[in-house]
View 1: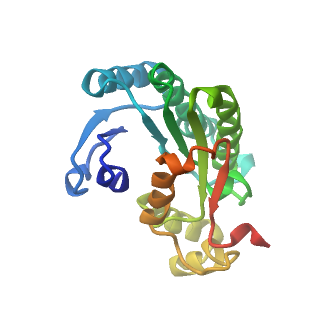
View 2: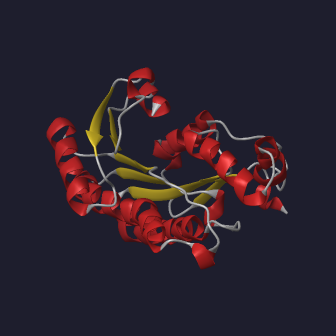
Length: 231
């Protein structure tokens, strides 16, 4: 958000809860949205059209997490994760695309995950949804390539966000270890660079993908995984 705003973009944030935006330091418009609900997404895009004339750049970044063995995984939690992560990416892209197509220019960036390429135990819904995001990214990229619209996915390792901070506590309980051990034994142990990513590192790649310099990149799944998948 800060990176795109700093480059001159008008920012619209779609979320269930706009708390914290006042401290972001970014001049942005907030639209309360449930990305898993088609009518809510349609209202969001109509608001973007009314205020900005439609979207030129779409960053699909909504995410939730739930840890459980498959045998115990609540079906409503499974549906919720796929709804937000995979269906939400589809709905936002579908409804933003007409305005990109009308201008023959657009950038769609799907924030996937390292878990779009590899798996971890107890994350069946999240891993499945993120793998689906990669398939969707490739399909959409092929459909709109001739319209000067690109669609790419960014696949980061663990990023220092509230979602990850909550996972530390959940993983500690699941694996019966201390919270500080979660970072060293689970989140960073397979990586070559032993640390969490910072949000600005992901934002920098997203900004590049929006630029004309990246016009030839589409259908890609770009890793920022601290060397996790190099092995």
